[in-house]
Image 1 (cartoon, rainbow, N blue to C red):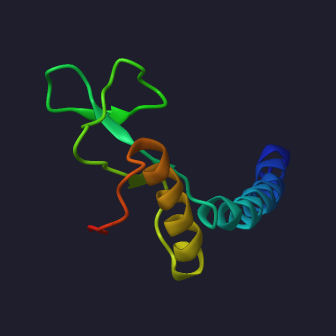
Image 2: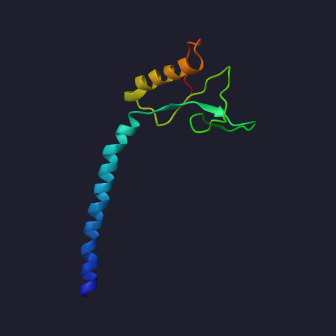
Image 3: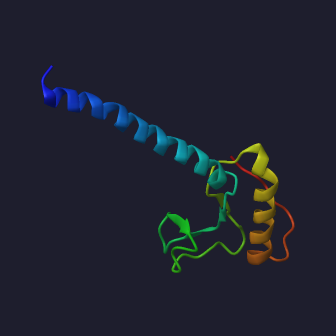
Length: 105
């Protein structure tokens, strides 16, 4: 076997080990992000039909009669209570007199 082929063959296990280390690191960091989802409030951008995050687009306007909230990450059973608490906080901020939340899929 030529010397260059042996070097290439020896590099593959190192690349596989690096890829496995990166994937393990992502797997350990991802549940923390998924277990703490944020709740964003989208608003209508101008006269268009586009709804964007109010925090990112100051020109967008929320509807005065309806509060729309969107979870930033997928909802799991372990973070449902925290997400409901965040939604109630957003509701108190935007529509202080209202008391009901209707979840939608």
